[in-house]
Length: 478
Image (spheres, rainbow, N blue to C red):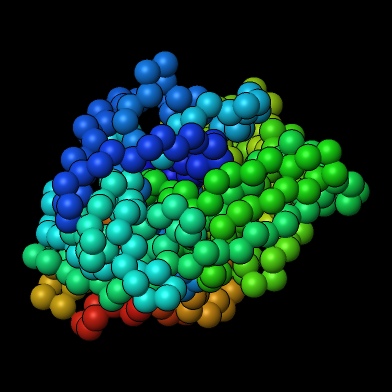
């Protein structure tokens, strides 16, 4: 399990918390015509070992340029794919925000993430709905004044997100997919946006929830934050629910969005929403938990074992260790399907296995791990097309498992036994008898090979796999 994946959900929670903070807008500086304002000074990256804070520093850094999220608002992106059986760490509970919330810039890149080198420029024109140019606006937080509505901004190599804001209009989000040299966007036509009324209620009682904070996010933004800590784009000013649980989001652009709702007594909620409805209802969940034991040889409790629960579909995760009796409890967790993994304290990189569980509001799901003994040893020898040892990981799942369309759905629906080590020879000990499915997963989660394997009650099984062609298409997001 890699450290960046353990920090992924924590980073997402921090970015969402900052997104929900309202900010005050000052008058934009008056740059020379046709040129963007000077970029703000870069924010120093925090120490990789320091826990991110949900409160702004005493002297907040200048706002970072805001990348935006949408080739066209509403287009969903392909989901990310972390490596096999690599769960993420649980985000720390979000602290209750003081009222009024302090102004804060969007979050900078998370700890340990190096700034991307410049790759080129993105240019385009901004127009009003009637077709005339918008002469004063912001691009990724930088003020621009141009009589023709033209802009040109520096962008990293590859994909660049562009957020355009102007007084009296809704935020426009675009994405330049290939930035090499100079990329040209089609004309950006701003729209006034619509007002959206949201009702926030308790999922169990349907009672209105006051003091909840809501904001909008693009789906691809959230996926980027989950995958690599990209900052979320502020699409509208956040709003707070009154005593009746009602709130108003203003100047919402057209497209498909996610409504993010946070309340300190509930789990963070993400709900799909289309502004054309002009109203939505969001039910907040208090969450459930996962409880169980980790038992070693002979049924002895295993103290200090590491246990992780992760769900891509619920966008939540938790991590903990067992007590002296081998017991653990993880939560609260958002309702959904989870993969729960346990590892021995003396060998944290070698999991005891993965168990699928269902988490429901107000309930405690059970997961009991027992160190496997007896059974057969499965040895998987993998050879590449030129005789090299390919970088794949072997995974055995009980039963006849179809080729998974996502790693998360596989781990959330089926137990799995991981091999020790990587390389040409991988060993899976103490496999129970029966029909199993062998999956070889590449570093980015793609299925390189799948085959059935019959395992006897004892002894040793030798499986030899020669990878001769291209790997199968990558798995969808875990």
